[in-house]
Length: 260
Image (cartoon, rainbow, N blue to C red; front, top):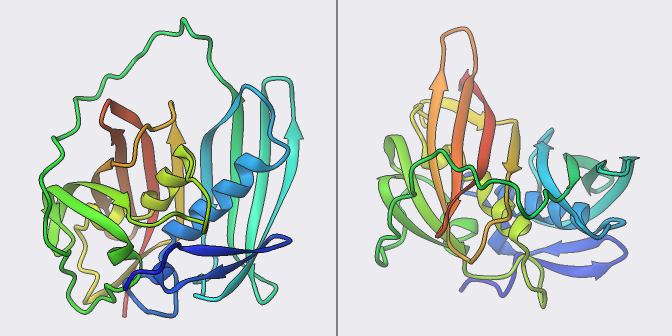
């Protein structure tokens, strides 16, 4: 049974992780989506100012985030009249396991042109069965999200497009925000666009950058993703984020590719 939320607020910046945060590689390590959203929640709440929005978040993952008790800390790096830079970290047993920096920017005027050069997203497919990922732990994050692939699949190499929504809230008893919904999904970008052999080789992302030119609307979000890689280089997963109305933003992830 899926827990009622990804986290429970224990007060004073501390959170209890539920089993729903567990990623596909181990029931003891979190998928980076929920902790990314937990940091995003703190970044948008910290000394919030009327008329500002989070336009870009970059998250660094120096160590696996354990399924356990976490502590979140946030501070302002620079606050200006029109832009401000904030940063935060998640600690597990006083060790940083995720870092973030975000630009909060004054919202654009109402008469700014709506420029969306990308094509419309694929239509939302009807209900589908549970995802298949050989050898993966599917009872945590994967089960806590509803997935509908318009093209590709988790076990099908190549570019893909998938709609997804949370079955449970990020924090128990709270409403999710557009930013937290986007961040809960963003780390799945490279999995939707799987192209490298992650069974024979070690393939893992070191970071996540989410840039939003507008706040996504609604529960259902769509990732359209692809992967690039070069011998002697690294991997790069790039994706587009859509809601039912179309293009919202972009996602980039650096991929470590190494022999096991």
